[in-house]
Image 1 (cartoon, each protein chain N blue to C red):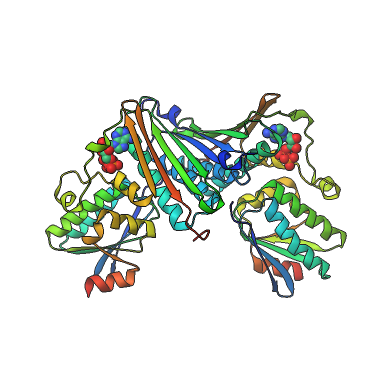
Image 2: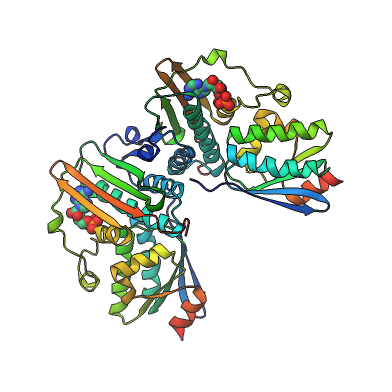
Length: 150
Length: 150
Length: 116
Length: 116
Ligand SMILES: Nc1ncnc2c1ncn2[C@@H]1O[C@H](COP(=O)(O)OP(=O)(O)O)[C@@H](O)[C@H]1O
Ligand SMILES: Nc1ncnc2c1ncn2[C@@H]1O[C@H](COP(=O)(O)OP(=O)(O)O)[C@@H](O)[C@H]1O
């Protein structure tokens, strides 16, 4: 186990079946706890993972009906971070065309949905989305705050 | 999502790093809860998964330093079961050469270890081990007892 | 087949309080809405949602809660939340929901704040 | 880097009781053994292990507990366990450990059974 840092990567593949996002959230929790993230940070990670999964379930229309996740703990002891990717082989979307949801408008609108990406961005430290006709990959990072387990 | 039954398979890949078996146990828990296994059955599954993982971590000497798990919910609604495989690409072992541990002997012996497989067989409904010089795959099954969530 | 959300309704100091237990996804949101609309249809204008038993929500579930808020705003009523996990409270703030619904730490201050 | 097991030692009705909190893996087993051997080295012959705070163990951790049992049998003492999850109790039965250590449902009956 020479390169310990690189080795700490877990991959998870889920079928697009209702509630399977809970499996992803439990795996995320295990990884967050493994690296000593505090309870609140862990909770934020798992909520973001749930949102990313249900987006793939609902919007990707991937023919293989699967979501591919990786959970990697990287960085040195002082600056450890958890990097999670959620990927599907679906039809993708243009991130620039997604409208920023506004609560004033949503309260009057027919469609109250459209919060997932905003929640993910609000809960994670870094978020990057790559999407094209081959599929979508969302990469999300959470840094461990100074003082383990706080 | 045509073939719903076949689709409910999750795969997980873990690095062979201390405590990573906890990630496997959390994934197992999520799958067991997903299919409505009761708390005690779920607990038995997760303990068996932990044992199978630490065996691979400790004994396989796999060059890729990884353990590959699958969790599949199969069968019809009346006879659902959770089938878990834990695989490594390690050096394998001869199951016939593993001695059955006896508590009377272990109490006096130098080496008190050797309980993992016995525990797995005691906690799961079906256990099958295939092992050769290419690696080891342990397949474990838990049936859902009649009366969901009991 | 994760268990569906359990929803209970109780009266506290004259106020209707809805308690949830479990995951608020779309079905969970619908369960809450069913009970909430029954209360509102009965003529009440205020409602407290005690989410102590809910450790996880998703945005589909929350958007159903926005429908409830819309209905309550229309009748000039008030929706309150109490006993949220830190992450759920943070999520409500991210969304701006906190401007249209009151968020209380515990049930006692929720009941006091909404009936006071 | 899951937290290491927390081990506490208390006296209950003259009996030394060891409480654990967390995962009993090899480090966890070593932590328990350290405290147990300190008690035995002090001349006591009986020990109750309250595992209420432990929801998961592995066979490496348990084999360290077998070492403790061996030591205690040598001095004709007694090791008891209480507050085991059903699965941990079942595991102890599968291993046959239950023949060499007493298993009690709760601490009160453990203390009573071992000091009575
Ligand atoms: N994995 C994905 N594949 C395809 N489209 C996606 C994906 N994720 C998000 N989208 C698009 O982005 C939009 C906004 O997503 P989101 O903010 O999560 O809200 P919602 O899912 O409620 O619509 C979705 O409506 C969808 O059009
Ligand atoms: N995945 C594996 N790869 C190689 N050898 C294994 C594997 N799993 C088990 N074994 C062999 O079987 C033996 C018995 O395993 P087990 O009953 O789990 O007890 P222990 O791990 O404490 O020795 C091990 O000592 C090892 O020789």
